[in-house]
Image 1 (cartoon, rainbow, N blue to C red):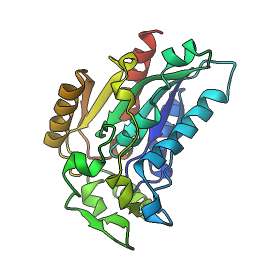
Image 2: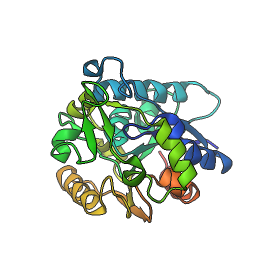
Image 3: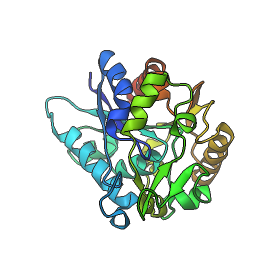
Length: 263
């Protein structure tokens, strides 16, 4: 199977939190890799940035494209929440069509945002959302870092209690500067990816309410003049934990669709 999924986490979440989704994809025969961020629990929070996170994910993306020359890796970038800012920037210029033309192996065939911010060049997440959410505790546990108050309710209200508790233990403080600095150019603005952008709306989301998801997607589509494919899942902000099998099936359907468009 040449379709691969690169999962780009949301804020506060280490890669391990997405293991149930990655395992479901792998069980169905797809390779799945989970990225991580230098801004997560950054030792010097003010030195972290959204662009730095994008560079780290881009390096991982390129390593996936270059590790196996026998096949043509076709990568679907799956971004969760804040990961939309990062993953869309990381994928910029790495679509399969352009890489083929340059004589390179493999490339990105589509982008999926799970309750994720698409991001705009020059605009930080704070600028896009109008400020910190009420559940974010800024400058905790140290200056320049932030934590989430009551993550069980905000992120995991529909997740099995034991799994939710285990995941809460994995959460780490996040650099505030990552939310206050812009990403680089976004792959969502590239004409080659038109028709290859998808959004998964989480209808029981308490971290990013469904109405807010609708609002920013309508704004993005209006500004970019590009329609996104859309589906819904009846889940909290964390469908990768509460409904990993259903989430995996949705991602796989989109991945196969992107591949079928050809290039």
